[in-house]
Length: 111
Length: 156
Image (cartoon, rainbow over the protein chains, first blue to last red):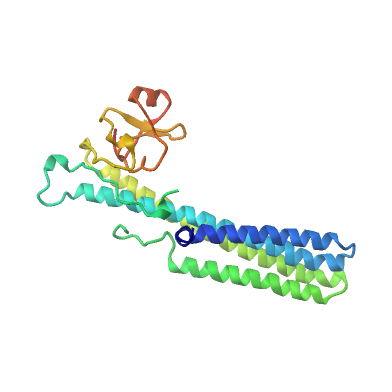
C-alpha cells in the first residue's frame, strides 16, 4: 500500500483533494442551511463552497496530469522500442532486426 | 527511461511553477475573501469579498486547466513524433517476438492475433501495446469483421 501510494503520489493526492473538496462543500452547505441570515451564509459560501470548488479543481488537475504522465511514459517505451529496432546491435542477425521485446514496465505505467 | 530529446515529463519547469503559483494565489484570494466577509455584519459589505473569492477560485481552476492543456499539447506533439517515426521506418515483418512470460497468449503461434472487445486495433501476441490487457485470441478475419484495424507498431 505504501509503495502504491509512493508510486501513485499524484493519484493519491488527487483523491485526497477531491474528498477534501467534497467535505468542504458539505460543511458549507450544512453551515449555511443552519441560518436564515444572508450575512451568516455568505462566509460559509466562501469558505465551504469556493474552497471546495478550488480543491475539486486541484484534484481533477492532479488526476488528469497523472493520466498524461502515464501516456508520456508509454510513448517513451514505444519510442525506445522503435529506436532500438532501427539500430540493431552490432553482430545481430540482419534478418532479426525486427525482434521486439517488451521492456519491464514501471508500476506507475501498469493500470 | 527517457528517449533522447524528451524530458521526463510532458511539462516544462515553468508550467509547474505557474501551476503552483496560480493555485496558491487563487486559494489565498479565497481565504482573504473569507476573512473579510466574516468581519462584516451586513450582506452589502460581503459582496466585495465574495467577488474576490470568485476571482480566486477562477484563477485556481483556470491555472489547473492551463496545466492540463499544456500537458495534452506536449503528449499530442510526442504522439505525432512517434507516429512519424513509424511512418519513416521501412515496412518489414517482425520476426517471432520473444516470449513474454507475463502473458500466456504471447507463446501463441504467429497466426494468432489478439485484441479485446474495447480495443480498436488487433496485435501480435508480443506487442507492447497489448501487454497487460485482457486479450482474446482470434483470426485476422474475425478481428477485421469486428471493425478493428491492424496495430501500427507490431504490424500484424
